[in-house]
Length: 101
View 1 (cartoon, rainbow, N blue to C red):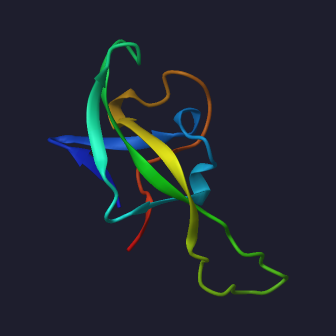
View 2 (view 1 turned 135 degrees about the vertical axis):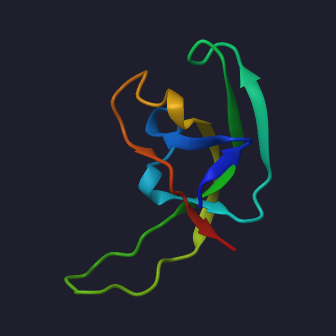
């Protein structure tokens, strides 16, 4: 899924997250809030909420692995407008966020 507020697409940058982006899952029922952050990137509206930490299963030298495990721990997320990414430090960024029901 992607996050959108009005005409703007949002992204997650690693600098704003407490866990690896590849292990973040956003439930479809997540409560998200938008607020203006005047200190971030000369002022932008951010989207915050609670995601889930996904513990991945080991590959165990197999070509395919069983389905992903279920999310286990709540973690905060912060999304910034896509146009504003790559203005702080190097790191992962994603527009597409894994989702769960």
